[in-house]
Amino acid sequence: MIRKCFFSVLVVFACAVAASGKEAPLRVGTFVVDASPPIGSPLAYDRCDSVGMPLTARGIVLLGEGEPMVLCAVDWIGLSNDGYEHWRDAIAKAVKTSPERVSVNVLHQHDAPRCDFSAERLLAEQGLGGVMFDPVFARQVIKNVASAAKQAADSASVATHLGLSQAKVEKVASNRRILGPDGKVKFVRYTACGNPEMRAEPEGTIDPFVKSISFWNEKKPLVVITYYATHPQSYYRTGVANPDFPGIARFIRQTTLNGLTHIHFNGAGGNIGAGKYNNGARKNRQTLAIRLAEGMSKAYQATEKHPITAADVSWKTVPVVLPASPHMNEESLFAELNDSKADPRRRTYAAKELSWLLRCKARDTIDLTCLTLGPARILNMPGELAVEYQLAAQEMRPDLFVAMAAYGEYAPGYICMKEHYQQGGYEDSPRASRVAPEVEDVLMPAIKELLK
Image (cartoon, rainbow, N blue to C red; front, side, top):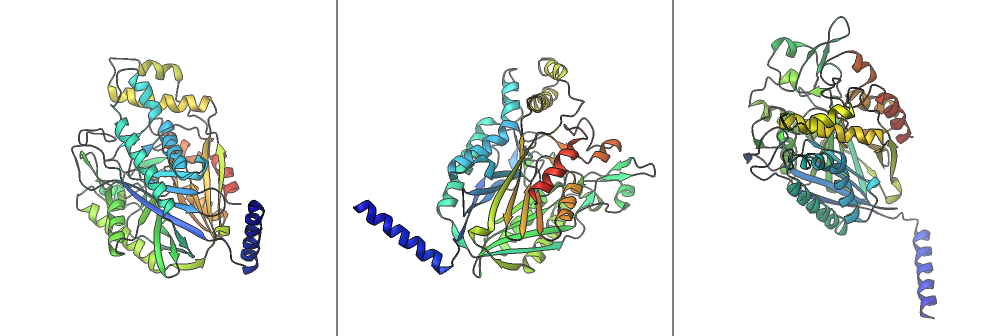
């Protein structure tokens, strides 16, 4: 009898909600976790001697219809193979969702750690455990982020409006690949470029806009998220862990907005850097940060708000198998890894390449995902993606607000356009790219599918 009465109450309540015409609300939670490495632990290229400015992992949890959805941005150089999957799995378990509905992307700062548990296992078997990164520290950060994500979900606030805008960023980004008259790469204009001739070349193909997405409870902002495509280096190899100029820009904006959580993602910046505007002088870190912060500020001030409910939010996943670069050979990589006389750093590269190659041979998939927020789409992509993918995605759906975060699964390395692999340069070289030119034939249709 009690059960029947309870069921009747539920039916009446459901009918009342339906009759009211009100959509279920969207709820948004945010988290920020310190991800700074211990002194003495490995950074991407050097030992960590100090922390100049804290590194963080920060993100949002979206609660609406279906399972929760998570976006997380990390101030590390890369998360690869089992390292990337451990991040997603732990966060998913904490907020009670599927790993496919969690995207973790790094900002790719170079004076920062990396994480690849697959390569670490291979190295540990050779007595090189902990040479590439500190696995104990990495696991603790993952645990802390998962706990913070759960707290964010538990304390999420109702979002009534979505804010969308963009603004041009002046004198930060420039294309790294400068072509000569023969159509081949004449110069690679790295992020810090001391050559005046290279700096005098035009900006080249970039996406000059920083995109801003914010959530609001009526007039109260809950969080702001920005997307901008460029390598984040002003200078590095200092032994001082820091989030470089995007991290400083993010700090400026969060401070200006009185502590409003600001999450920043790196777009498809694989072939983009600050080289035209940065000769490597230390003072340029502040200059670039201020320019990026000014662009973020202009975008925020131009925000157009749209009502949003849980019904306006969805998540789509397209798993893909990326083609391995033909330069990788399993037998030679095993030999290099097992060579006790070889340079340990070279052996770590062999372990990373081998881990990725074995995944490709097993046809292991990578998830490409798209978060729908009313008229906006956020694409989450792997590797050091060329900016042409980002521009192509925007051209596919000019009727939508399309933002892109790259630097998700980092194992593929640089992901270029097919034509790039015929032009030479660094990004398409065997040292940098672990995928074949046919990768474009895989990614473009997948992007189109995600944007349907």
